[in-house]
Amino acid sequence: MTKKTQFYGCILLVLFLFLTVSCKNDKKEKNTSTWVGKQIYFPQNTPCIMHGRDSLTKFCKDSLRKEYKILFYVDSTGCNSCRMKLLEWKQIISEAEILFPNKVDFLFYFQPKSIYELKNILSANLFDYPIFVDDADSINSLNQFPKTRRSRTNQFSKSIQNECFLLNKEDKVLAQGNPTSSLQIWESFKAIIGGNQNTETKIQTSASLDRTIHNFGTITKDSISSTVFKVTNNGNKPLLITRISLSCGCTDVIWDKQPIKPGESTIIKAEIKPNDIGYFSKNLVIYCNSINSPIVLTLKGIANNNIQNKLN
Image 1 (spheres, rainbow, N blue to C red):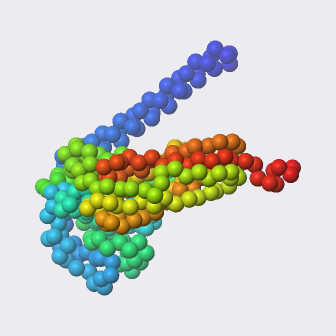
Image 2 (cartoon, rainbow, N blue to C red; image 1 turned 30 degrees about the horizontal axis):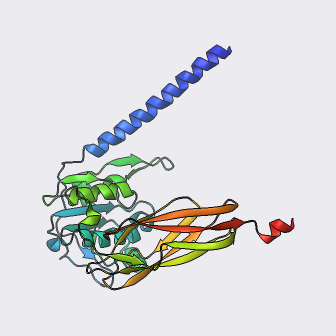
């Protein structure tokens, strides 16, 4: 085989792979877009359960009469606790309650492997929002949610992303996608619910920090150093830190994702692990519903080799 033949063969292979990926993306996009505008049907008399309650109840559906609904469905396939992501949902619910009070309901339809397992998951996550227990998988039977093939087992299971929908009051799909898996999806949901307005500015408060710059001085390269910033809510509305963006992979941040009541404070723990020697200055950008958002925090200092490296 000549070099020229090999060259054209490589070009044909690249074109084939490109067309294959494009077709798959087009098919996925088509499957996603076809659900917008569709009616979602709910089974009647589906029992529900809540953390801290011993028995199933049937009153949950009657209380869900708000302008928007977010439906999240999980079947019994795979690791239920992994797929539910209840901690992430708690943060989203808290944010929605602040930004859109009395405007959004969350409908969680789960087909658990057992009620005992579900209760343990709710307890472990301290999740106190109603869960509809759909043992018969009725909501899927009524709506025929999209399916995707699992490559390892060669079996069919439902796509988690395609089983999360934003609905209007008439239960028609406005958008779809799992907001716990993508910040962009959650931002698009908020834009629709808020009428395409900047949701972070709709309900504002005032936040202050004890400082915005921390100098670590001289620290060791490749070792973790940390500090805390104190955030105080000085306004008369709850303060919610929706996200904190990092300027590089050498930094990390931990904060309480629950709303901060007026007059109360919380802390943000910032960590840095310098991977280069010399001076560093890294930014953390806080996005919240404060009038001075975004707020920029700066971590700076000098990174040196450790003592062991110096001796060698």
